[in-house]
Length: 392
Image (tube, rainbow, N blue to C red; front, side, top):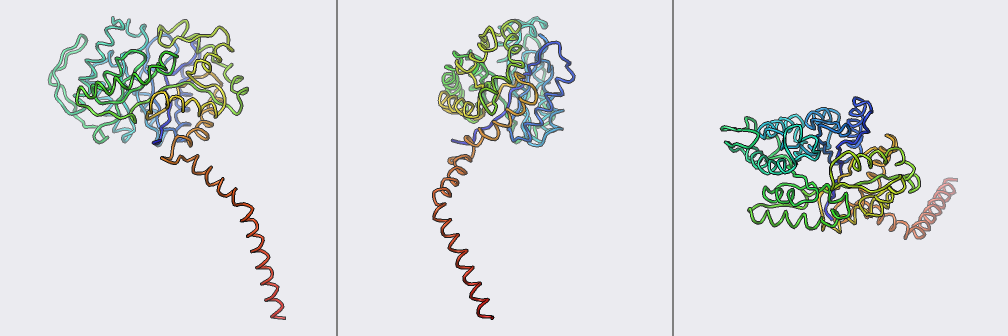
């Protein structure tokens, strides 16, 4: 197994009615915490309505987070490019690429909240059509082309970027996929990465993983593009504690609020979640196979299951949530970094296999080595006694 990257997909999800200032600061502190834990990526969402996913500009958040971190890569997860002038999307990302010294990533999507697009006079069909148009323009601009184009929302005349990206030749670009083939088609057409979100958040989506990648490869071949599974990122759900009982107790803090958001507020049927009470909600996550609330062993099994189901991918992104209080949430990320990462990183022989193998070899020879150590002590003691006697 090649080195599997780990990261988060931060919408974020905060209960409506909270202090938004401290909630956003908590998000920034989480990203800094993950940077210290050696997480590879953090993707930040864009939303404009419904009162829960309260980051309106992932680019501004990334600029702030970049000043608080050292190595973690920071992506827009996603920029709703159907809402924006594609020229300014490309310009902002190139500027962030310079500000972060190459740590930025561009995630693209049509926008997931209908209450966002309605304020712009767009419906979900419009946003998906604009996704294809605007992504094509953005990629042409990022590759140095001069673009003249008219979409239903913007007109570009001899548009071009006046800065080249800091990254050589370009920072990572990915497109989001929930359930339909729209995202995989665009990823293959442009030879860019894929962010599979809904494919791990519902049982039906989970079964669609292999189909997602087959669409990417088919479209890439048809368009003369090259794609890599290393650029495929899966988004999944987890909360981990030292014991399963502790994990279950932890999530009673806030899992119901998260469920009610998708059940009653977000008009996003691909992320429909079941459960009438907290126990049913926990059981839905675990029994449906879409996530893991439990121990590090449960987390490892979930990642391995996703790997086997998909045929392999490049990054496991944990959907950030506040099912547990901030302290337990941070601890969950720590446990995953300490006990899950090593089983999926290190190359042909993982870090976990290397250290466990060394332990087994040492344990298997312990009796022989202990006997030799005792013999060495006895020998040196005898020699010293002989030296003392000779001097006397």
